[in-house]
Image (tube, rainbow, N blue to C red; front, side, top):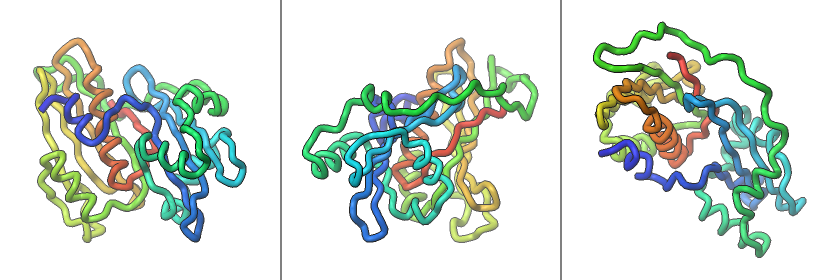
Amino acid sequence: MTTTSLARQAVDPSPSLHYYVIHDHVGELDGLLAEEFLLAVDHSSAGLVSAFWSRRDGGWRDGADTSRRLRLDAALRAHVVAVGRAAAAEVYRNACGADLPGEAALRACFGDLPAAQPPPLRLSGPAATPGFRETRVYRILFVNELTRDGLDALSRVWRMPVTGDLADPGARVVGVVHRHVSGDTFRWDLRRVAAGAAWGLDVTCDLGGERDEAVGVLLHGLTAQMRQQGLIPVTVDRFR
């Protein structure tokens, strides 16, 4: 299986934005959130920008406050569903009888772009794994609960043996995946982080060739598949 096909198993990565349907406390539609992670040249995240449509206000605006609350407020997350663009468009059409604006129009609602980011954190030296040109280590951080059904779904799509007990709060790594693709080797560990308050995918990329496009495709695909199981991405950090 190629890295590209892995990324496309769950969703077509052509739409760049992440969409969320938000309901109020009685289950009625409250709004739609469209987000985009801004990426550095090494595919780590350099910022998060978003647009929010409120059913009450009837218009689109900068969604930075909503995006922040989504990651800090577990009560809000209980009323949020991650969807693809097609599902978001259907919700929007049913709510206001109009087509969902294109992604270029939604980006025009984003607030100010984040200031220049500091250099990436490096927790280990630059030496590559023997036999490879370069080794990179990323962590994709997520909030929300991973259910047993969600873990089973990830196990199937990734062909991942489940090595940890989801019911055991002391179990950190619950699954490990290895892939070899066109001279590159990838490994990702699915683990609890922050004392169980969040989930992380620790992704090691051993690159044999001169190009790194497969890294971006892989990170995008893994994020999409985690979102399908209710996990909300927070950041993509690079540690090596």
